[in-house]
Amino acid sequence: DTAVSQTPKYLVTQMGNDKSIKCEQNLGHDTMYWYKQDSKKFLKIMFSYNNKELIINETVPNRFSPKSPDKAHLNLHINSLELGDSAVYFCASSQDGIPPNTEAFFGQGTRLTVV
Amino acid sequence: AQTVTQSQPEMSVQEAETVTLSCTYDTSENNYYLFWYKQPPSRQMILVIRQEAYKQQNATENRFSVNFQKAAKSFSLKISDSQLGDTAMYFCAFMRPLRDDKIIFGKGTRLHILP
Image (tube, rainbow over all chains, first blue to last red; front, side, top):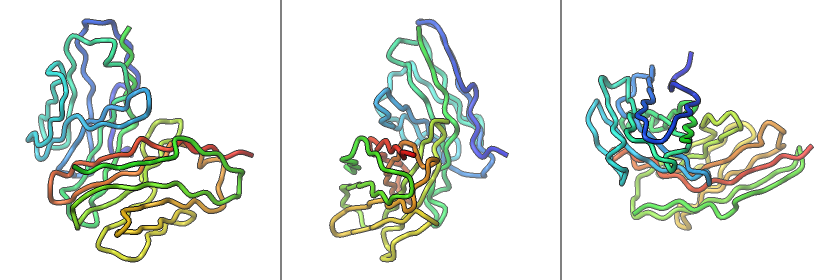
């Protein structure tokens, strides 16, 4: 019974294509995130949504567009994919800063390879 | 701005030994949370241990314990009786609850447990 699930697990696509990564959490959390892990394993936050509203939008190209149809889902759509977009993308969720539940649960990650 | 620094990119220890991973952070906040996450080859991020800054007592989870020095802004992870399954990337992370819920990660330490 996966708490945070991402699909697909692997994604290989050509430059210029548009692709989406889906994320769903069944924890009842209010906040969801997208992180990008680069080749050096450094995790960088991209977006954060709280109850379907965008609260964090780091410096990310506008080719990346998050979409939250409800608070259990946060999908990531990427237009015009570039080679530099190749990375592992993690979805995560957390409850709204209410102790002791201020911990984030992560999905398994999606390895995106742009060729 | 908050930062998290892990000064050891890679470490190796023999099975059954004790190993300590270091982490320092910088913040002007008084209320925050600190975490250690493990990322095994499966790539899923697993919460190992968390510490609330207002608690003086160091958190412990089985073989994992932390040495939390709030004044020094240090948060090291000690793994006792290390096992082969502990081989993974370990990320130290910082979070401000009731603010932006953003989780900030260090660059990670790759830990190898040798048979």
